[in-house]
Image (cartoon, rainbow over all chains, first blue to last red; front, side):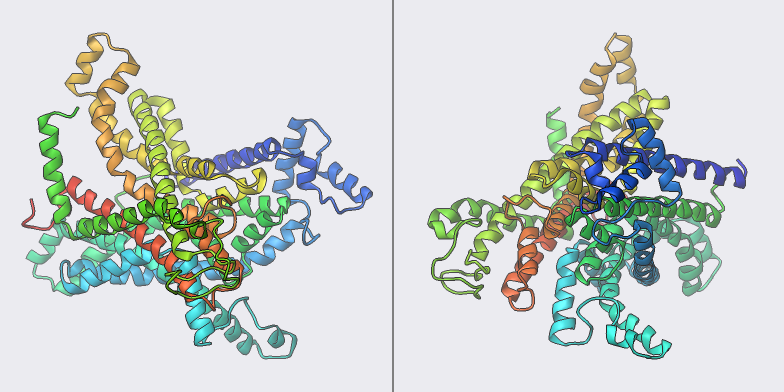
Amino acid sequence: MKKSSYILVKLVEVAFIFFVILTVLFFLFRLSPGDPISKMVDPMLTPEDMAHLIEQMGLDRPLWEQYIIYVKNFFTGNFGFSFHYGEQVSTIILDKLKWTILLFTTSTVLAAFVGVFLGKIAAWRKGSSLDNVMSISALVCYTLFIPWFALLLLWILGFKLGLFPLGGVLTPSLWVGNASLFIRILDVLHHLMLPLLTLFIINLGSYLLLMRSSMLSVLREDYIITARAKGLSEKVIRNKHAAQNAALPVITSVGLSLAFSINGGALTEQIFTWPGIGKELIFAVSNNDYPLAQACFLLIALVVLVANLIVDLLYAWLDPRITY
Amino acid sequence: MLNKYSLQRFYKGWQIFIKNPLGKTGVIILVVFMFMAIASFFVPLIGPMYDPMTGIDPDIRVSTGPSLTHWLGTDNVGRDLLAQLLEGAKVAFIVGLSAAFFSIVIGTLVGMVAGYTGGLFDAFLMRTADIIMVLPSLVILLILASLFGQFNIWIIVFIIAIMRWPAVSRVIRSQTLSLKHRPFIEASRVAGASHLRIIFRHIMPNVLPLAFLYMTFRVTAAILVEAALSFLGFGDPSQVSWGMMLQWVWKSGHMFQAPYWLIPPGVCISLLTLAFYMLGRAMDEVLDPRLRKEGQS
């Protein structure tokens, strides 16, 4: 297969899977107790507004027409109105998305880099006390109960020592006043530290363990023996021959462990009141804000699928042994 | 299935397993938690005050620290925290083991059928597994909870099992593929055995031990997801779980005042999941000789 057709096949696959998820969600909304009108239309609206919204979402039509309108609305970004905010769901979500992206990418990238680096060293010194300490700490990090760990950090670093703010994403007084852009960025970073630290430590454990086991299996390969026989220095063998090849499976795992990190991300956002998609989803679910919950869920599903697609393509591009 | 040979093999595996430091630590932690879970049956017998859910100390109306009558202290309505912690151990074992068991059952069935039939049906089942594998289970449980209201503990267990079978089915499928063309399968086919009989009588006994070895990792995941769900306030309100205890300390605003309430449940969740995870890693080493250190055979 050619590269372009490989990408095309993958794209079609992802589009199809997303369509399945979209359809399942549609039917779940219709299967659950209560009628769909009460789920998609805010009961507090005036009768005229209600009628307009019902008309727009096709809730008075037969099921198959509802489905077509539902799919059409999805592609035009019309998710209805949030019960709680009384605003277009799409505007709310776009507003929250940037905070989630900021927290998620920084923590994942940092954890992946540090995890790969430490995992490399642990595997290289397999069996030493350094390796034991690192592996066991990584195991503990990996199985820590995220909300509890977050609360502990909040209690010690935020409350007892007062090093970091207890929640939110910015200090309102700074943003109302005329503080410079630099001060504002520093303010956001200051708020970012605790949630970032939580997710970083949780993710670090899994990356370290993965890199370690991947590196150990690479070190048994023949080309490592060849490199040794050629008289290359240990450092070159470790960093160039072994680590570069061992890092590849770790990249794929970013896609596979995404589900795990999204669960963790939602919990972390909730505890540090970080205004992201995960916290919004939990809020929407707690307050029966169905349109908002639906949109948050679809967005998360889309992100998961696209991230896996990117990882697939990246892997194929990085590993020359894979043919399309 | 249980002949002398397989018992010997089991004994040898156990020897390797228990020599492994991870396996040993895991077993020790598990035994401690098992005692906690067993103790939870006896604590309410001491007096109605020690019932984890309804027992209220008549003298206490605020959260108090550890004392002689309440070794770990009480929560804000005067319930004994140690009783809740022991009850939580029981619930964690029930949730973890049963969710893992159900996911093993589903995963084994799907894996055997997919591997045995092959073709389009196989492709369909495995693609489904791939989709489910990448979906975040907590998010799915949240959206279902919003649509269908509060779940009881068994529905939560079942949903977790449905979210967790794909990895098992992959392993079982590849095992089935390698068994499919072995002479004894061919022989029974020639002898006229039906597909169902071949799957359940000849393939299942050979893949089942493998499936149960993969159970430990599922236990870890199930305990964590249930705890997270309870922590967010969507757990079964009639069960005292560790996640629920954390939800109470958080929602009642005691997290900065009552470390004796905040710390134990989290330590327990983390330690129990760690123990199951260690067991899984140690079992991997029993299965895969390449992972063992030199000198251990």
